[in-house]
Image 1 (spheres, rainbow, N blue to C red):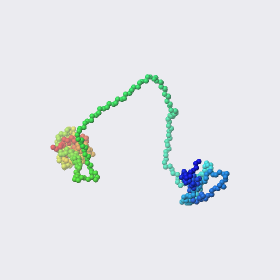
Image 2: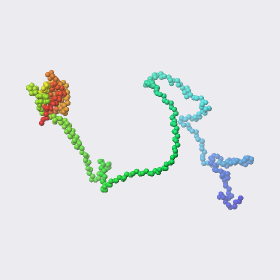
Image 3: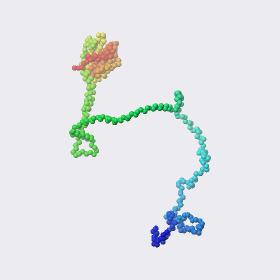
Length: 411
C-alpha cells in the first residue's frame, strides 16, 4: 500500500493532521428527534465500563442512539375534566350487561306482563250497540255452468317429418348468358320556354300608406293633411227608406185603391134570378134603402132589390157604397144589427179569397121559415143578402155573384 506523501491533502479536502470532533458512530447514523429539555443531557448518563462487561459475553450488536440535547416544544399539560352538559347525568352511563350465553338460551321477556288486558271484549255499559246503517240484500243463487267438459289438453301436435326429396339428375350446365345493361328511359323533349318581350319592366305598385302614422312621426314642413273620403252608403239607406215608406203603404193601399170608389146598378137578370118589379117588392126595397141610409149615414149611394127564381126561391139584397177603413169590424156590426130582426144564431166567418174583403153568415127564421143572412164588406161597399131554401155555403157563393154584378168600379 503506498504511503502518504508529506504535504499532500486528503481527498475529502480536510487539513492533514486534524481529526474530526464528531464521533464516527454518530456520524454514520441519522439525526434523532429532539428531546424535551426536562430530560437529562446525554453526557450526564453513566457510560458502561469495561469492567462491568464480562470478557466472555459478546458486545451488543447495535449501540443505543444518543438522545438529542434540546427540543423546541413546550410541555403539554394534561386535559381538564369535561363539564357535563345541561340535563346530562353526572354519573357515567354503565355499559350494557354482557349476555352470559347465546340468545336462544335466555329467558324470553313478556312486554304485557303485569298489564290488565281482560276488559277489551266487555260491552259498553253507557251506549247501546249501534245498528247497521245499510242492509245489503243477499246475493242471488248462481247456477252452475252446464257445458260439455273441455277436451283434455295433450301435448302440442308435432308435424310429420318432411319426406326426403328424390335426387335430381344432374344435367349439362347451361352457360350463363351475359346480361346487358338496361336501356335508359326515353327522355322527354325539352319544353320550349316562351320568349319574353324585351322592354321596361313594370314597376311594382307602391305600398299603401298606413292608416295611422307611427308613434313619434312628425309631418315635414309645409305638409297639409288631406281628409280621406269614406265610401258613402246613402243609396242603400235611401232604398231601405223607400221600401219602408212606400212598400208598406202600397201593400195596404192597393186593396183600397182597387175597392174605392165604386158605383152600383141593379141588373134585371142574374143567372136564374129575376128582379121583381111588383109594388110589394118595390116597397120592401124602398124600406131597406132607408134603413141602410139611416145606419150608414156616410154612405155615398144605397141599393136594394128582391130577386126570385122560377122554382120559388127568393133572394133579397141591399147595401151601400162609401169609404170604409175597417171592413172586418163593419161586417160584424152589420150582423149584430140584423140578429134581432131575423133571429140569427152564431155568425160564421167565410173566406172570400179577396184581400180586404170580409164576409159573415148566420142562420135565422122569418115568418116560420129558415133563412140565411150573409153580409160582405170591403173598403168601398157593403152588401147584405137574405136567402131562403139555401145552405150557408151556397148563400155565400150566391152573394159574391150578386155583388160582382151589382158593384162596379167608378169610371
